[in-house]
Amino acid sequence: MKMTYTLFLLCALMTSGCQAAQCDSSIVAPFFDEPVEVFGPFSVEEVEQRQMVEIVVDGDRKMVPFGYINESWQDLKAQMLPGDCLFFYRSDDASWEALHGREGYILFRDNAPVDAILTKVS
Amino acid sequence: MPSAGLRLKNRPLSQRMHREKCRPLVRLASGAPVFANGAVTAAMSYAFGQIGRSSSRRLHGGGSATSGSLSEDQIRGVWQKMRGYPEIAAIEADKGEFTLTVDATKVTGYNPDTHTINIDPGTFGMEFETVMHSGFEDSIANLSDADWFAAMDAYPSHYPFSAERVLFHEALHATQRGGGLSYHLNRPAYENPVISRTNEFMFRNYGEPFRKLDHNAVRPIR
Image (tube, rainbow over the protein chains, first blue to last red):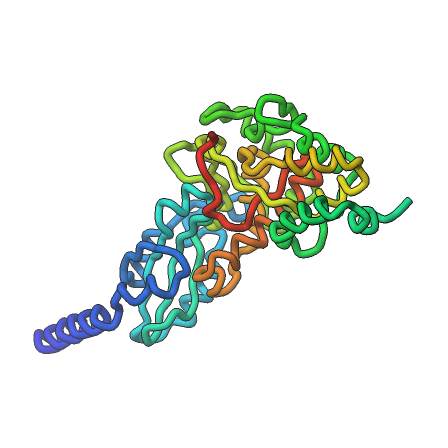
């Protein structure tokens, strides 16, 4: 039992370390046509915690990850493969002052963007 | 009665050169918008300086506002009026009723996850760079030469953001949910269609000048 637990822990640490090595946030910004700040990588669970919002569904208030665009989030999640990386991006302050800011999550695979979900736009 | 095009062709060389000088600024809209008579009148009005920062009565923010001069009640009042337009009504019919917040501690924008538009009243202290557009040019084509020049010269280079423009702009973003990867990576892919549609709406209904597609052409009101 103790052996199994140790092996599990080792695997978890290796997977985490491996993912961190693959998910280099510095590769994200060059894909954008304007300056962005990049945060992450995030796990699916972390993203769902960060994006939990209250919405009204059929008259009931519910806490749902990504609220009314949960379906888009489910689509993005369904595409994810082991080794994929999720980052949060936010265009710089100047873009928001000039009313063209945007922010959201972007999915990377093999150092290239695959899909994204928008959480705010100006 | 000669057509507008013929009238322009027949103008003296100096006028045609003036027009050619302006022409590069015209190429932004995907087809000329459909103008109501009132819009043409409004366009003529601002062309002659009758709708200026000090004299606008129809718009809220644009024309008459200074920074922070719009209260939450005023912004909500404008929003209620905007919801009566078919364009906004259609979005709400499809996506549900928007939630509007007025919060200066948050940026102006649209949150698709909560279907909320937030307005920072400080936005109305900003003005955008304008472009001349074919609808406006057509509306003044039959003026006398002196008036034609006056209209061209009076066309504002910058124009304050109105509550109507900002609310309509943000509401249109709700129609872009999803949009693909280029929508995230490429600013013109998501902003230019919204600016163009907003330009057409604002000119048709309020006679506002067209906003330049370059988003960086925004500055504090001078």
